[in-house]
Amino acid sequence: MTDAKQQVLKEVFGFDDFRPGQADIIDTLLAGRSALAVMPTGAGKSLCFQVPALVLGGLTIVVSPLVALMQDQVAALRLAGVEAETINSSRSREDNIASWRRVAAGETRLLYLAPERLMTERMLTALERLDVRLIAVDEAHCISQWGPAFRPEYEDLARLREIFPGVPIAALTATADATTRKDVVERLFGNQAESFVLGFDRPNLQLGVEVKRTWKNQLLAFVQRYESASGIVYCLSRRKTEEAAAFLAENGVKALAYHAGMDKQLRDANQNAFMTDDGVVMVATIAFGMGIDKPDVRFVFHCDLPASVEAYYQEIGRAGRDGQPAEVQMLYGLDDIRMRRVFIEQEDGGDDRRRREHQRLDALIGYCESPSCRRRLLLEYFGETMENCGNCDLCRNPVELSDGTAEGQKILAVIDQTGQRFGVGHIVDILRGTTTEKVTKAGHDRLPGFGAGAEGKKEAWRSFLRQLVAAGFLRLDIAGYGGLGITSKGQALLRGEVPFHYRLDRIATGGGKAVRSR
Ligand code: ADP
Ligand code: ZN
Image 1 (cartoon, rainbow, N blue to C red):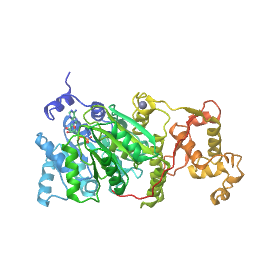
Image 2 (image 1 turned 45 degrees about the vertical axis):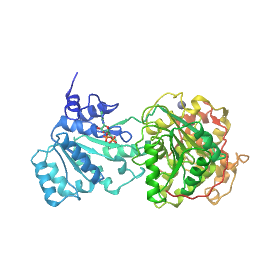
Image 3 (image 1 turned 90 degrees about the horizontal axis):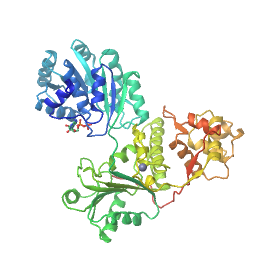
Image 4 (image 1 turned 30 degrees about the horizontal axis):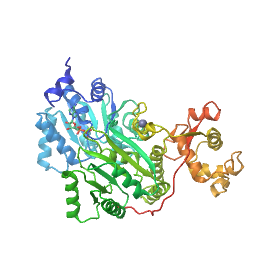
């Protein structure tokens, strides 16, 4: 059966089938409803608005933040015979005027604009007179202050739905956790939109996390399981990168280093060797990887905790692009968390931003401490659902869980008694009976729960709290203030209706100072 969208796919783009999710998103837009599409880079977001643009006819406005990206897409569309234009600051005034003439004459199907150009009164007034049938907002996460890349010029796009009533809006992004997604849907659509989260699953990746002990030996043991396979080892600092590469080389592994502080010639030579020779292990900072498309990378090993779940997902995404089995492993210890917290505190930006970054880090820690299937957890973070994968370390070797119902209830009681407004640090202080200024000022030293967990170490309580969040008993508040809220599952735990099982925390303390470089 061929319908209009299928025909466009075949005749204009030369593809036989839609990828997962594309057809649903396109159908939603064709039915006149707005849609948020969350898909990883390379999954095929552009077709989700390009196909309906051609089926609908009239004019589709595409908002994109990067001039280079707009130019590329317009060029590609023209090659396919589609009338596409862009008006932007990198082109001459004459070129822009000529483009606008074609748009105004109704010859153009897709018009690409930067948000600040679209949202001028002059442009909006001119566009209102035209037959606008669809609006697409690329990199839509930029509209959210909670997202990883807030752009002030995106905020104004919230007016679009009022300026073009009845015109469906497609918002597209590759990076959106639940909070960012919610914010995008609220701002751009006034909550009237369908969300589609797709394509994040990478079934051929075997996920694993190990507590960091003697990291060099752990790294070597892992790498030695792979003979003459290409792999990437990520380290936090340049110095550590060189140290790890030298150590592997001493032990007979074909390892090379890569970081931004290296001589360019050597760096390029190492990258070349990795791309062309067999069995090279690249030991690198995150400076390595952008635009690296090597299909047969068999493993990605993280010596240190990455910055966020999004960053981790992107970094491990470089393994197994050929679809063959690949393994990703991360070392994780208390010092990693401390170091990441220090980085966040050192970053510019307001307190809200910092709190939000701490929350993002908490999500990654939740992944490390997960009591069950890691792949499911990772996918749930991005909004997809699945069964246990059977392939990650926890599915293969289920961890022993202990009953933590009593501890969980103590924690929830304190959170309840303080009105669900405080973050992890304050709650732990109350539990341990620590009289900080904040505690005494709020009168929290008079709560029944004050000192109820005096026997427990700070880090143990923090781990309980993280596991309660990871297991869905607690939620980090949406507005980004870091307060802990009790979910309905948490209420059930408080009432003693459900148990709480936790992973005995086996976080080791290792050495290392807070040094970061790319
Ligand atoms: P994204 O914007 O999500 O990063 P793109 O839209 O640039 O991804 O698409 C990535 C690649 O996948 C492009 O080369 C595109 O032509 C291709 N592609 C997209 N959809 C399909 C499809 N249904 N069939 C085959 N190839 C597709
Ligand atoms: Zn699993």
